[in-house]
Length: 179
Image (cartoon, rainbow, N blue to C red; front, side, top):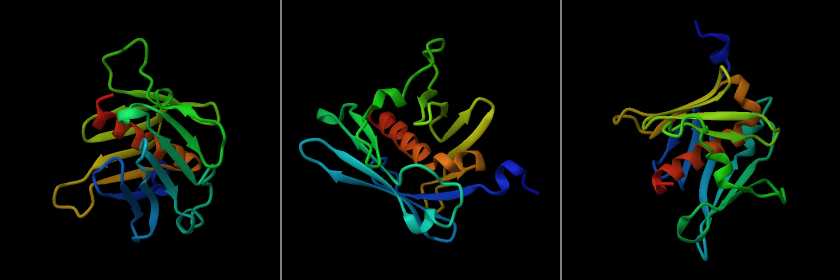
């Protein structure tokens, strides 16, 4: 029997392995999150969209429905904007290393609420944690599966699902670009 921390989790399947363009669907095949290139000149802009029909099915989802990742020249780190917010946040702010352990692949970020989170990163798995609580787990799928990866967002992560997805894809982009 599943524990309370996973019983009401959201499970999303990621189709496509490109960290700049992918789609996430729930287990019923409904579009949940779309990641697409919104512009490419002069610099790349990637738009993450939380699909309203999917989000409306899940109580507790808060925050903006979109985020925009604005890259600098030659795909250098730029900034992130949530929804229609006029405030931009530098990408490196979402990719901070712990000063005490600079060899760790973990990356820290601060949510819009001011709360700090950490992504534990390995080549095939990433975990978003808040102290002792795991909020989300992203895992590369088996080669025989039709999807590239599976993301499980536990109940504690549902309110900030857009921020979890934004920082997940930003970490994947940073790895692909060698930041």
